[in-house]
Length: 109
Length: 115
Image 1 (cartoon, helix red, strand yellow):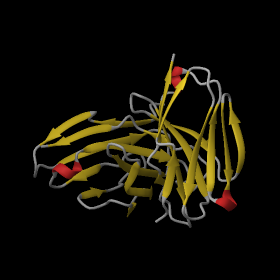
Image 2: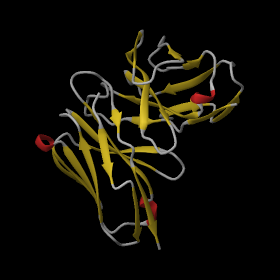
Image 3: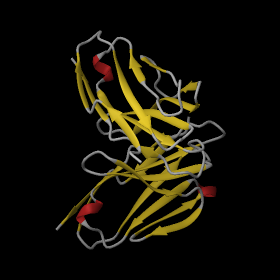
């Protein structure tokens, strides 16, 4: 199966700062998603982004499929952005989503 | 809509006991899946189903059974619990399959401890 690497593993920001999270895939993916797991454990889908750029409020994501990576940008971070951010992808036709190990983000006042 | 629901929220088992984790969704989604999440790791796929009557193995299927008799329900069975199965279990669903463009909805999780 594919390998999914995320960096950095941990990140501490002051409120208002910007950040970039990265996701690298070992193989081409035809489905790439970003998720946020809040401190209470709930997983929320942020983006479906197999290629190109999408924006949703203070969050945006860019995937360069030919180079097998994706970036998640968080601007003007808030304490509610804290949690773990996961990327996940699928290769081929199998309906198997493979997750990275996540980036743990802590936003402080 | 209640979305994806899971029961129980917490469970403690002794080694060798069996139990079933329940998962239900009321969004008429065809695709459902089970993941486990261990400390410091991402989610790993256990089993998935692309529709009623159809199931398949994921990355870590050993020790778990599933069935899909209805579109709404996708229970996960532990036949003989082992300490290595201590984890947080998540159920997820989406309309057309994990490979589609549809949002994956996750349940709140079940925290299982096997002594």
